[in-house]
Image 1 (spheres, one colour):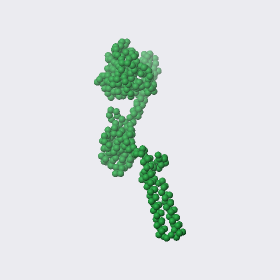
Image 2 (cartoon, rainbow, N blue to C red):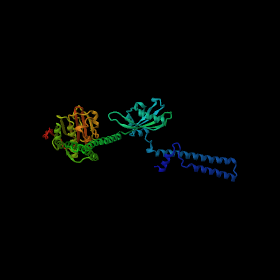
Image 3 (tube, rainbow, N blue to C red):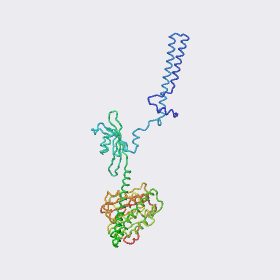
Image 4 (cartoon, rainbow, N blue to C red):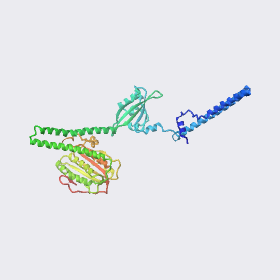
Length: 482
């Protein structure tokens, strides 16, 4: 085993420069001393010149042979040190392997002249770049891989202006990405070609969070500003000419009460969402009977369904046959929000169906409920459970176009045309549903189409035995359980 200092000497010495351990210098000194002694003896003993020359030649030759042998031994020692000091006694990892292991897409680009577009080629693309740009070959024309003018412009700046440059690059497709592209010059190659490196950094999630924050602040301020402006206007009116008008006063106070209730609901929903988010990553430890929760929500929603002229039908297994691990109040909130939305957006004379199914496989739980409608999974469990309880709430209302479905769980997002009038809400209901379902390690899906209504499916990991569907007694009022 080599000593530490020997490894450091071997690793810091140039490859073609042998290590001099100093063993040749004593030989040279001994040779010089021998020559000096020979000269002194020649002077004292008065040796003839021929004898002195022969003796001096022998001493010099012996010294030279010893120095040469010591130098060859030192060179051999240096090579042994190099091999022993290298990692594992072999070569370090190759450049290509190191760059391919990096998560950021990286390309090495070369070019000759600014006017020659065909000379701009990528010489190397790591694995991440090949996946991002769908590159199948190790090198090729740059314009075949990237056609974005902004990215090509920063590449030209790095190649021909010799300066760093950045831009934003957005991909298209089912899941578009937002990336920051950066180009840096690498100088010139031996054949005169200019070199640059192009690196992409994924900022999709960061920009989504920032956009969500901006939208949240804008929508929250708007939702609060509208009722506040209404309250302020009515207060000024009541202080003025309507002060002594009892009819106007009663009407204005009724409107003010509604606006105050609207603000109260918004603040309550914001606080509820905040509490849910704080505990979202703490799995609930209780047991919840989903069938009992649905029955309770149906009974509570009967007056609303009656006022709207909507029939509410529930189909569920017997109690204690659809049990999940969860927090009862939050499961109730999920079912209540979905049922309220379905009743609110259903025309008079239509039916809202609430179906509870238990002991479903992951595939069956996430399967389409109403074939023919556009479908989108708003939340998919990270880890699948053996069986699930699914709650499916379906209406025959106006429905939604496909492009609206991915954004339904965003805070304050509401489909155009459904933002005002009696249907106006806080826009937080489905966001709350998504966070609660995520905390319960479940899934959420929506199916909808214009004029054909919508269907929401929530599925949660199940506890308990296989259920049997039965006909439950009807709920009081218009709500009918079957």
